[in-house]
Length: 105
Image (cartoon, one colour):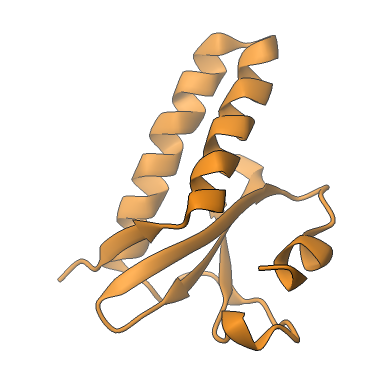
């Protein structure tokens, strides 16, 4: 049974920002990115244990995992598996200062 996907507000903003950045160079690729995000979320909902654990000192993100956006290996989804849902914490580019960003969540 697939779990429900819960997208935190910052993660939703991340999606918008990634889409806008990609669209500057290639609007068609940006649309593909958006579809790939949705497909990857659906995959996580079906198989929530995917991805590797991402250890942090931030106790609020205990059990954090990361997984790549399908077809966009530089974009990472950070999520936590909950009892009945998958909570999407952030979607970040691999070149961002990920640890600093996540320490402030």
